[in-house]
Length: 78
Image (cartoon, rainbow, N blue to C red; front, side, top):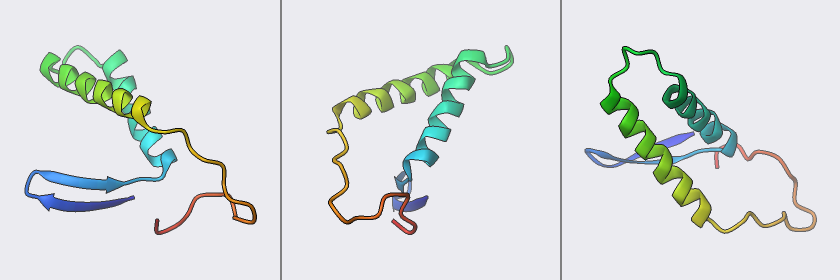
């Protein structure tokens, strides 16, 4: 995972798919089963972030198959 600050309130993140999927799964768990003391506004905001993520994910082109001779697996430092 890499984070880059573009502006004081804007970050750009580069994640391996397994890192991002772990964060999204945790966020979905919180939205679906948060204890009653979690503010509704926080759950609404997190739900909107997940909806935006889902929309962006649907808009991505499907992953292309690796080129012949390339090595499969997570790339480090990418």
